[in-house]
Length: 74
Image (cartoon, rainbow, N blue to C red; front, side, top):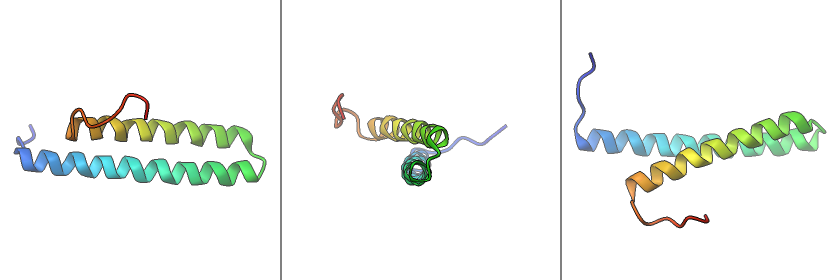
């Protein structure tokens, strides 16, 4: 069984996860553009979808870390 973590450790982990998700989204968007420029549309679409998924994860974590500071549209 795992040990419980305190609030500070939980915040640290959540911030790390948010930053990781943002980095992965950026990486996938860059890869998508590269693939698109090479004419690999199917692969570009796949990595673009992955980027959106990572971006969504980051937004959820942002809302958890800073409730109410985010708009529904953006």
